Length: 112
Length: 245
Image 1: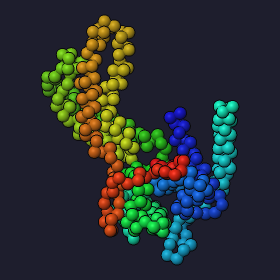
Image 2: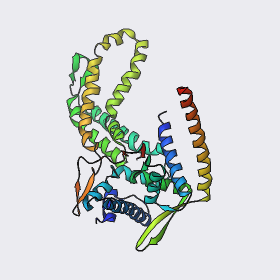
Image 3: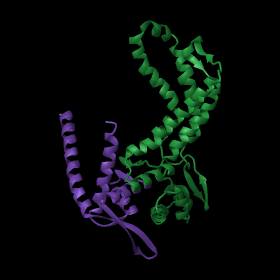
Image 4: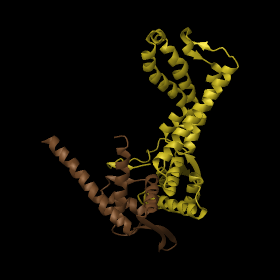
């Protein structure tokens, strides 16, 4: 159980980032905001947790960051899903659905 | 408007990466803080308040630097734990044991708690322990150790004596019950001499290193100060869960 918690924490963070990047490329701040908005503030990242995770995903080849200038005078690093990242998102999405369905069943049984 | 690049660079320190990549990371983090600062200003906070709030995003820059380095190097958690806990802990234990051995070689007569040989206290050893605790905690912090890792690395000698007694006692009870039961009465003395007093001395030395490396830095009129009593970073007061390092 001791090692399960960090795994869940890290795993859920990975899914959240990959999911928001599935629609469009975003820079770091937008990723954090998109997650917060998408979950109505229930989940959030801070600077210290977001970037190490982004770099880790990039290292694995699931996302790719490139410097782009979309506004005058501002170059930002935009992250987009790679083909491997898209596959990973599908796999992780399935795993999380199974996980939550199982938990949901347990809670349902406990309440019944 | 603060110089975010400089603020991030000074707090993050050297990442030990290729200079170009390192500069990119600093620029990216600075951009994130600048975005946050702008948004907070739009919400009605003053320039200084917004800058302080943005900086609270990182509570421990040493740990943050280490997290980034780990992510870039692709190092696994086991290696990190080895560097931040086991190596500093073993260094503290080894140095303290060597010092104790040296004292014993000189023929120094210890003080005996409860008059028993197992409860011997060597005061020249105890006096030096704060420095060793400080060394262990410092090594752990340097490797990006979390607070509990720094503490455990510093208390390693006291923890080892506890573990030693916990492991040896049951075996000794089987081998020679009579001798052990006669010593059992003096177990309190043993713990005083080898666990509690050394633990306190080690903690004393480690204490300054249990705080985060740069506190909660804040910006005030272009200069950097340490803000106290601010909202804790990494918390999401309205939300359910915040991923924090």
